[in-house]
Length: 342
Image (tube, rainbow, N blue to C red; front, side, top):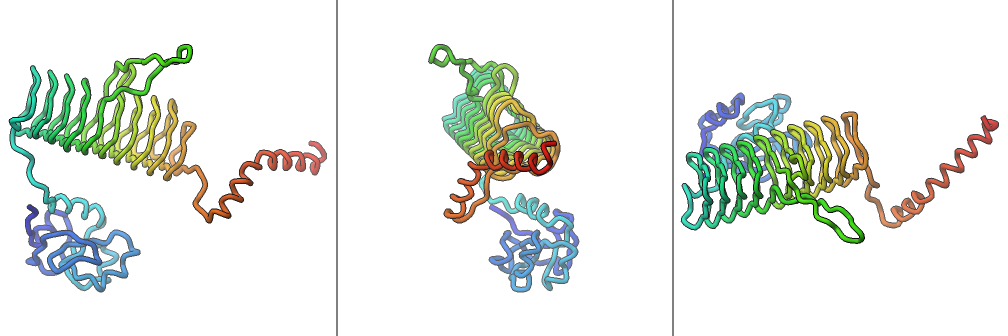
């Protein structure tokens, strides 16, 4: 269960300047609108400033520029949203994992298990699996032969790790994620498909978070690689031999086709489609539902598709879109005629 903190304790833990009562007790986090006297809240977006005068929060994480807007207890920080993120760890209320190895777990031969591990009910470890110290394997997980998982990595219930997968330290993988399934590789032959057996693996760095039901396929020959600090949302498909650079964030329902390289500190919004065999440079932002069909060589924000509008208006625009080629040809001819054919 989450514990109660004095405001002075929170100020020290969050490296914040305390303005107010150091003995104020804080037992939970809440929004500005719903907070009560024992709650800590935050304001990161000035648009929510209107809620400050009326909030009942015991204290507010607040930027120095806004301290005059609130008369109550304040924890003053330059990055309130980051401070809030750190505070969520302090108020985490989930129960501790099962200590040790559950009697119903199945452990293969020649496994190496670190100290202080947790292996939940009905989990299965293949032969030659290596788990570092503090690893948590949730109920019903499967870890294939010769896979390696680093210190303090946590697998939620029913995660499937295929054979020969390497996962670093301090990672978190959510339920029903599948790491190391075969890539979608087939060779056409006289109307039939000949399977290309996927001989590579998956290598995941440290401090990576992978959402529920996300699939990361193993490489055909070389490995599929996910670098340190990457965060991946739910229901993302990452195909064989994709490489994703350090600190990149990928939102839900994005699909990345095979042998694509994505740089460092990119952000890819929801439902983006990225075709295979292309390269995206560092610090690129791709907006929601965009289709990326070519390499991106310059940092910046990129979009595709048309914006939502009233259906009647959208239909007219769609019809005109189909006429663009003809209109462009006519304009070119008109320009040539006006310029005397030069």
